[in-house]
Image (cartoon, rainbow, N blue to C red; front, top):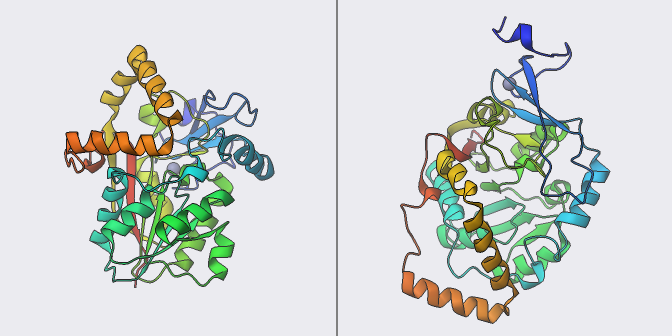
Length: 329
Ligand SMILES: [Zn+2]
């Protein structure tokens, strides 16, 4: 019996898919970012008091969810990424470099071996792979069809629309990277997704995933919005879902900014909005001008690899989690 049992509105048939506990509580889902869509209205977040795993409930309809991503999230006009203007970053993403350095610590990756990335977005992970790995064979799973051309042109990557198409291609990745993707998966699809990736990967291969660190047992009062995320991970639950699919988990820890620092920074609304206006203006400039400015900026700052960056920091109450999951030999 858990100490929480007498206060929990628990239905007897509901249990946590990460740890099996049925000590479940819930909080309202905060939908602010995508107000034009009704898909995130009237949701709750159920979360496990035992391991901290959280999931939005009721489950979103998969077809409506796909339409949401097609209409609101993926098309160039409204999304943060304009795939038609995809370019190699002037300075590699510290986050992506940190993720791949971590992967290399736990797998013997040889020249030419394959890296798979789920949802490469602007291509930071593919760019980092070209720098951290020796002549990698790159494959991607990305639903935006416009992205495939860019990834191929810039990084020689082969892109597939879904996991099924990738599996049929006979791909056998040694490294799998999913940076801020797993939290977009529906609860009912998570185990199958991880089982299928496990089957696909080369023995001795390593799966590095990064997700937001949202453990409702400690973070329920430090959230700004939940949409469009469907899953919410504590350190323990992130480890458990990979173990449940047959992976070994030699590493899991918090990373990125400390919660305290991040929460303080978003209270300074005025600074934040000035910064976002500047950012919007910058992205309206012609691409060649943007690149020129960035090159000048980094030539002056000379801090391409600031290892003091939060992206290289681990431990404590930080805003993200990184896990290393290995498929045993
Ligand atoms: Zn649990």
